[in-house]
Image (cartoon, rainbow, N blue to C red):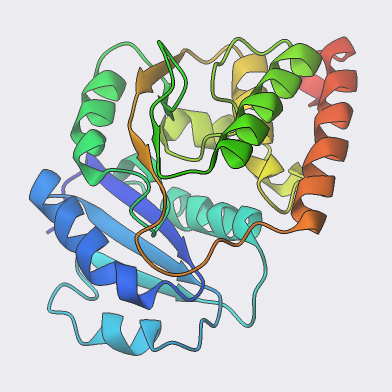
Length: 245
């Protein structure tokens, strides 16, 4: 029987099969009652087949299979819509499959959501920099991107490009998911920006971000170009009422 106040963790995957054993095990060690939803974009690495062999499959482990690589944003939106169609999920976490997001942080996020906060962001840059195993060039690029976002959008978030988040269901219910325009990593900024403009209570908590354990990064030049353009579009929305976001 599913508890009425259950938590769903959404993990998009594309060629992340070698990380799934550890990430699911560590999540359930951190919070045994979690439900996990994998949104797989036709990885071709045996991800769906492996998931179906797990004893939790169909109860606390779920799968959405998609045809081809459709992008991070649409994977999360599909997962959010799946959660919203099931009223027992009152808290939703989004995180990467590559273990750069520490599953042990999830219980802390849930405690904050059970308190006064509507949305919690795992921040790499609040009260200092907590990033491991990145070359200095990539770190400087990330820090520069965060400053670019804060300057243009005026959003008071130290790590606006971060992808480790926890939401109350009520936040996802109010987000205009069908109108989200970003397809890549700009999605992370757009979702936080809209939640902030809608006056939801957002808290950042410090995390240690460690570069992926296995597999390869999905970042590309086209994704970076899209991010630059989408942030400019969000900056223009500063002059619009929240009702028109």
